[in-house]
Length: 338
Length: 286
Image (cartoon, rainbow over all chains, first blue to last red; front, side, top):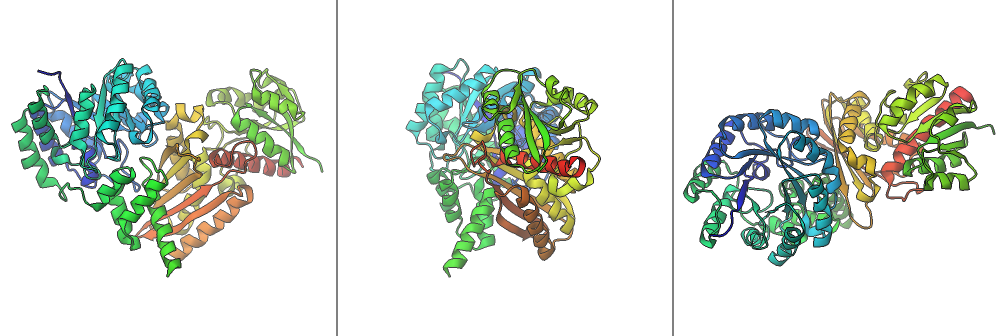
């Protein structure tokens, strides 16, 4: 038997993007209960863009995440209840409120080159004895050595592990390996990985991460998540079973959660359509997808063209506002062309 | 022409850029630069023939001719400086988050602060977005205004990085108190792209009276007001209405005085501070 792999379920966080932040208390109660019984390590619940992400820019939450967390905290018995926090969007005050609502694990996420803006939030979480994770996004945009330098900032603050996210679903398995192996070798804390399936590589990349020593992997039921979704949890558990890794997750229970509870709440099938493929191909933040589709409709454009321009401009996570900027520019160009 | 003597405390990037802007002013004279250690900024000021000290605020308090003091130190330091500047009859222009005095965004509320002796410059994002929030609100009555400021990573100093919540919380408050929205929210994003990006600001507002012409007229008018003191302030995307939601996008190119042009975030807060100082100089001392 190989070593233990910890599964972080983000169906109720990254999956929130795919349902335009419409999770209800009932849905959260059912899904969280199922996940807890199936045996995942952490159940992450937040707006897709993290605590306080509910906004015009990222979409308003239908039900406040604090209410959702409070509901889940009453039900979750074995797993840790987690939340995501992006400094610049959420604040320590939001973290405190989440903590009061039962959150015991927090992942503090920054762009891959900006780890130092998370120091105050990580320290605030550690002061509350929370399980605290430093989370670097858009890791395709930096070389492994740069990522190590940034991860060390988290390590120095005392995080419990460092998570690398392929937020654009752009990385190839060898690129994942280069990043994970360097961190695994040099850091004193464990490493984790968060995949997006925009190039159809979420499972393969997660396996590649494990092969290089990653101990924590993010997954969602039915792959529900931004862009073409994440590492599909029930598939991943089956694959890990075959590979002989211990996850603590019961395959048949997680299959039931995915099929009977999560699938009915999905608004569209989690497939790799042209636009989500473009995210992966051009290295664009996955949660831009639905916003770009909406802007394309509104300005009479092809979403693909908007995404390509966003990639060319090297936009980072959270810059959903630039979708309107690009759409406006493209529509003006088109007008001038006519 | 007679000028009013000013001092700057804190010879870092902000303080040095302010000094260059004072040099260009027709109403202000750069009389003193104060720090607490021998630094590049102190040396630079000295090279320009500016009187300098590394003993902090004390020597400035003794100079009766100095009427206006820019504080570009830290919130903690300004809390200590503020009462002493007041006791010494000096106007304080506070570029820290201390907020001892009221927030000021020149084109929005400077006219209403004619007796004030301590001015807080909000945040860079506040200087860039509150005017638009204000312009939308006066034309359309904002229920909720939300801004996204994106600045180049290279232009976010250690102070901003160590306390990014201060940016979001202060800016959100200013969107309400000065911008007139019932509720405000601020988001800040750092983008490390090379070459560095210009500061870009998006202002979204949910309004009660979505009258497109009135909103456009009001926004265009305020932009002309800002451009008087921030020439690099530009509209990227004119007001776009989607039901009762208004979106405006602006960018700020810095003047390139001391800091590079992409540091529009630092330029705008400094340009606003100079605007406040010049107005006070003209009204109270010249």
